Image (cartoon, rainbow, N blue to C red; front, side, top):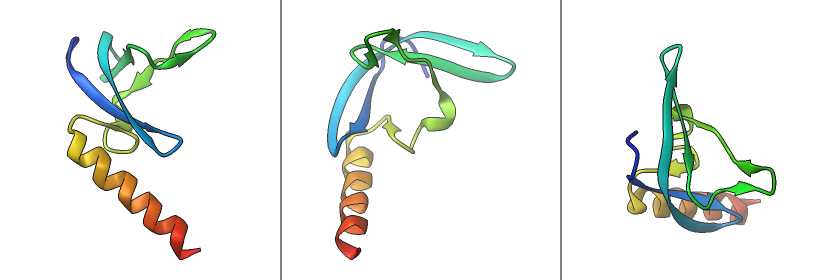
Length: 76
């Protein structure tokens, strides 16, 4: 994860993009924030463990994941 790179995240069924900033490694794990993602309290710190779970480095991967989620909803 590098500062300035664009990532894609899924929220309420929509794909958004944001710029990574404030990258920091602690105890061998990398944490970062995404510009435009957060709450009233401020920016959220995100662990690299979330890559390919709800944060993606490629838009195509985010689209495929969102499509798989939609398929699961229709199965129920």
